[in-house]
Image (cartoon, rainbow, N blue to C red; front, side, top):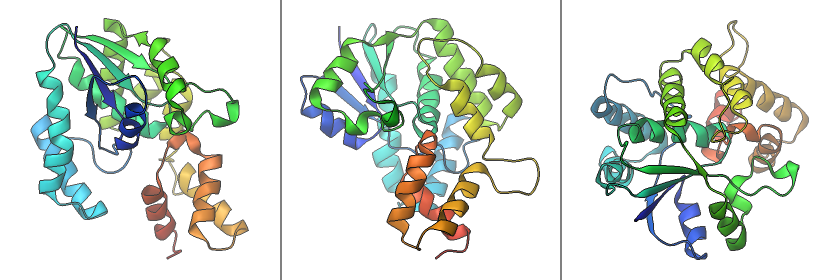
Amino acid sequence: MSTYHILNGDCLAEQLKQSSIKNEYIICRECLIDGQVNAENVDVFWNVRAKFIAESYQVSAEEYFHKTVQEFLKIDTIPTDSEVCLWFENDLFCQANMWFVLHLLAQRTDLQVFRIFPVIENQSDTWKGFGIATAEMLERAYATKVAFNPADIELGKQLWRAYQKDDFDSLKQLSMRQSSCFQYLKEVCQAHIDRFPHDDSLGRPQQTLKEIIATRDVDFQEIFKEFSDREGIYGFGDLQVKNMYNTLGIV
């Protein structure tokens, strides 16, 4: 049986290379927590994302298709009866990416799919995920992988559909479902919903950032660290936080 590891980023690939877990890596180089994700089909979706990434992150559409889309297309070529391990953390950044991957994998009923959870030894590190993992911790995580059953994969597919369409009512209902393949699902879905208040107030991330700015000297790295400590559930990287920072008028 072949084993393929779908990883949420290049950093994790480098970490795994230091462990005994080799096999085949497919790297998810997306940030579906940011920008437009709704599209009528996957071909339109790639073009929508390429346009957004080019405009927001100064990455050409050609590079996006070469480095990102080509990795996702590898899912179609995974041999029948292979084991596929999803190495994704529990924050919204990673979960949105994983929901999309499950949407793609839902078409591959010939694969055995597993979730690899990060080993968290201290509650304060809940949202730090694999970033603080040693090789030994990665090996422990792999040894305790959790199998997706068809209902779990369907849940991931439905979560993606609701997320993609900004269907917050469905997202909230889906977050109540019990599955051993998802942790903090209720909290993560609510955190996403809190990004889009019904009134004209700031979303939760922007409000938190505004509060931090009001009590800190304007040093972005210090502000980013404080934001990550408070709102690690979002999993935002420095680029996403810097964009919010700038839209609040702090350039």
